[in-house]
Amino acid sequence: MATAEAETGRTVTTDIPARLDRLPWSRWHWTIVVGLGTVWILDGLEVTVVGNIASRLSEPGSGLSISSAQVTGTAAALYVAGACVGALFWGRLTDRYGRKKLFMITLAVYLAATALTAVSFEAWWFFLFRFLTGFGIGGEYAAINSAIDELIPAAYRGRVDLIINGSFWVGAVGGSLLSILALNTGILAADVGWRLTFALGAVLSLVILLVRRHVPESPRWLLIHGRDREAEEVVTDIERRIAAERGEPLPAPHGEITIRQRRSVSFVEIGRTVFAAYRRRAALGFSLFVGQAFLYNAITFGFGAILTKFFHVPADRTGYYFAVIAAGNFMGPLLLGRLFDTVGRRVMISSTYLLSGLLLFGTAWLFGRGTLNAGTLTACWCVVLFFASAGASSAYLTVSEIFPMETRAMSIAFFYALGTAAGGISGPLLFADLTSTGRVGDTVLAFQIGAALMCAAGLVAAFLAVKAERRSLEDIATPLTAVKTPEPKALP
Image (cartoon, rainbow, N blue to C red):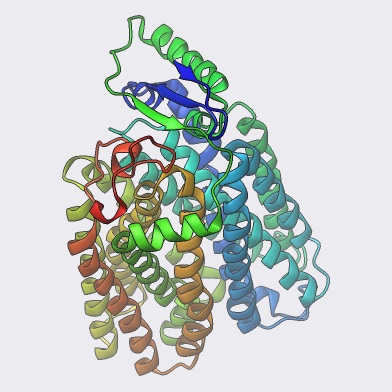
């Protein structure tokens, strides 16, 4: 039911969130996973290819006058800088104009920039479109994670979010193997192979763009922004499809929420909500993002240089090693994701962060003693990243679900940008320098920095992580538009 209010808009009492959360898993939910989640595979493919083909791009005949350090340092930092700027820019628009409109636009930006990277003829062109590719993918993080968490039932939200974010590493495996082909001059010319890898990413993006046309707007977003009739139509259609698939009535929903609809929320209100009413949760989000960003940069941005400099692995063979650790990364969220919905967020987030940090400390110690070879170092990385990947994916899940609906995309964007700027821009520059010197002590230091920050984030999570498993988003963080919102100071 709804009653009109002349000054504040309409006040609506609805059970739409409860209806979405009580849905059993279905083919419809798989279409959401495929339509929204597969872009991380492309991101993983592209980022990995760039890291693996750095040595080829720096060689004569590649078609670019660029050094390996510029590819792994400058270009990587620009990509991440673009992602940070894009997250903030698109995140605000996602909260204001809707999830669907923005996840279509951001993917189109990503597609165009990737295609234009393939035709790079000068270093400045390559740098520009690496930045713009990141600009598109940054918007994807905000729009996609918002839509996924608002469409997936509460009982499955944790594992689904982790697996989707972890699917980046499926793309990384493909990128590693694809780079082997791209680097093989017996098959592809030196100035052709790397271009085709970017072109392939653009083609796959186009396929995903077509699939996304069938993903609906978030009913939760529609409801709050005064479009409750559309929200009702979307949810009714979803229920009809799932009931027909199961051949039986759906369980009854439990719980209603009353909201006072509004079109937008100001930056001032977003800032006051996140950093005053939810300051402990803000500290948690920042810690998780900084920790995972530095740990990953400590390993991934220097892995090729470490293998070639210390273990004399040929540049065109490093892709095999990275494929192994990328597979370990995906197995973490895949196998541990369910525990985030059953054992609970606090235990799983803190333990995955702490375990990965401690294991990386152990790897650094073994590496410093000279007891590792290329194979055993890769095995150590694989174990570290099995836990780290689940933890890193949970950072996106956490900031998506612990802040009010009206601030969700902007919260994801802000913490992604802040944490990634701290670890993702400075990280590539710092760790590329440390791992390229050829000195064992410098590489050990890179590992120790990443491990220390990961452990610190794990300790923060042990005290501040929110019990969000199997709870509705509206229960975890009451919408700003909800009638009789609890006092902010009473929230953890």
